[in-house]
Image (cartoon, rainbow, N blue to C red):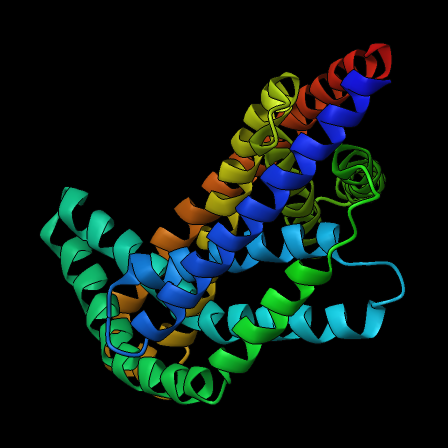
Length: 300
C-alpha cells in the first residue's frame, strides 16, 4: 500500500512539474510568433498548445468544468488561427522540393509559378494571424493556469486518470478507423488523424510520467500520424493547385502550364491513394500495440 501511495505522489509531483514546463514553453512561443516568420515556430506553438491542453485536462479538479473549458477554448483558438499559416508553409516547402527534383524545365517552371503565388499570400496571412494572436490576453491565461495548478487535487491518481482518458480516446479512434475502412475519403481520414493525435498525446503524457511500457504504442501512433500528415499536406496541396489553375482566364492564357499542373495533380492523387492504403495497414499495428500495452497495464 505504501509503495502504491508513493507512486501516486511521485506521479502527481511529476505531472505538476510537467504542467509548469509546458505552460512555460507555450507562453514563450506565443509572443515569438508576433516577431518571427519562422515556420517551425508556428508549428511548435501548435504542438505545445496540444501538449499543454492534455495535461490541463488531467490536473483539472472535479467540478471545475467551466473554468477548464475556457482555458481549452483559448488553446484551440490559437491552433485554429495558426492552422492556415502552417498549411501554407508546408505546401511552400513541398513545392520547393518538387521544383528542385523536377527532371524537366517545363515542370520546374510550373512549380515555380505555383511557389511564387503561394509565397505572395504568406505576408498577408501572417499579418492576419498576428492580429488575432495579439488579441489573446497571455498574462491572464498564465495566471489562470497557475491558479489551476495550485488548486490541483492531491487525492487522485494521475496514471489512472490518464489511462481512463486513453481508453476513451482509443474508443474514438476505433470508431474513426471503422468509418475510414468503410469509406476512405477526406472526412473519415481527417477524423482518424485528429483521434490519433488525442490518443498519441495522452500516451506520451503517460510515458513522461515514467511508464515506458506505453512507448511501443507511442511509436506506432507516430508512424501512422506521419502517414496521415503526409496525406493531409498532399490534400491541401491539391486544393491550392486547383485554386491556382481555376483562376478566371488562366487555362485560356496558359494552357501548357495548366496541362502540366493537371498532370502533376494526378500524380499527387496516386500518391494519396498509396498513403491511404498504408494507413489501413498501419492501423492494424496500432490495434496490436494497444492490445499489448493494455494487457501489460492490466497485469501490473
